[in-house]
Length: 243
Image 1 (cartoon, one colour):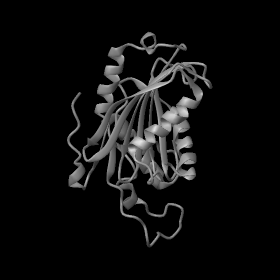
Image 2 (cartoon, one colour; image 1 turned 90 degrees about the vertical axis):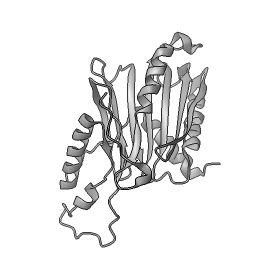
Image 3 (cartoon, helix red, strand yellow; image 1 turned 180 degrees about the horizontal axis):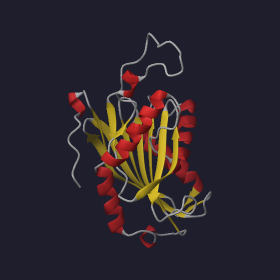
């Protein structure tokens, strides 16, 4: 059972997943470094979560450095948006990094397909399967003809990982049908959620909403989204694929 605090956290996560991804939008020297990492990551397919930035954080606000500063986070989320997709939304604070990507030809308000990625701290009391079932519970409350299917649950590069297909005949908030695949990865530094979401006309049978070949393509894409650690040999960062 999830604690009431975790449920409240998870409701925020579920809402945020509709519009998220690791991003860096502050004004300090460290934030500028983070912005550079984000831009490099978008082109190289590697998303860093504070990583070596912690060791570069040198009191940009003229405050004395903390004597109990934490060690740099070496954990890395490797995710690259499909070629030609654009950022439609970004958010970043101390424990949550979010962003959305949509195809270049789609509009920020009327988009049909969205990639959302989130790296979040403070979810230490749940695992990846519980996290997805929290998603399921939230969706079931606002969707008609709702169904879900496990696509994968196991270990990827040493991290507990689960992937689930969710079908929503009609979302009460958007009045649209929705088909999504969510990948949850329980990292050591962050909890990661990666979602591909398609809006459709309301449906009673998802066969009418999306082709199986597209679901297969999404699954292949999510398989390439991984977490690794630059210093921990149990979670090696292998060279990225050329394709």
